[in-house]
Amino acid sequence: MRAVVQRVTSARLSVNGETISEIEKGFVVYFGVAESDGKDKADYLAKKIAGLRVFEDENGKMNLGLADVGGSILFVSQFTLIADVSRGNRPSFSGAMRPEPANEIYLYCAQKIREYGVDVKLGVFGADMKIEQVNQGPVTIIYEV
Image 1 (cartoon, rainbow, N blue to C red):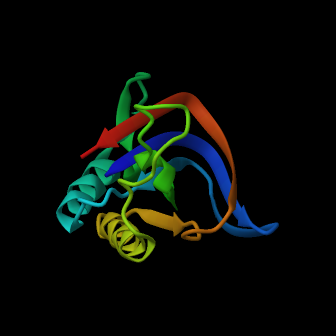
Image 2: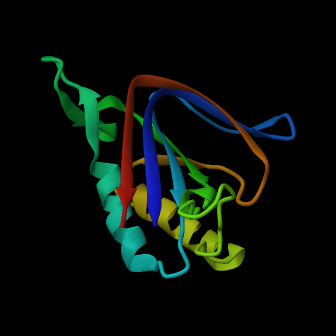
């Protein structure tokens, strides 16, 4: 399981020209599920993301979390995070979980993050999404569990 967390001042996700989800300050989280992943890893990742402190406090230190700044998460399923590019130039996605169970894990992880009191907006699983985001910093954190 992999997640790429990017700190943003705003983000908007659309499908076929229609806005599906939009946030202001917070994180855009790109989330990929490997074939061997389960809910235990999603539990761990949800706790880590919900508690991540990368917003600046009054002293300019990255010490504040989403709850402290009133932030939200735009949570986007992205199987390409599981790509294997160790051989050749074309990525292999054979390690990615099949769509139906991957979507279940994606929705499960989003719900677990919500249980920590974080507002979570979703993408559309399997859709061709357009994402506009304004990165702040930039700050990008990568989790691999």
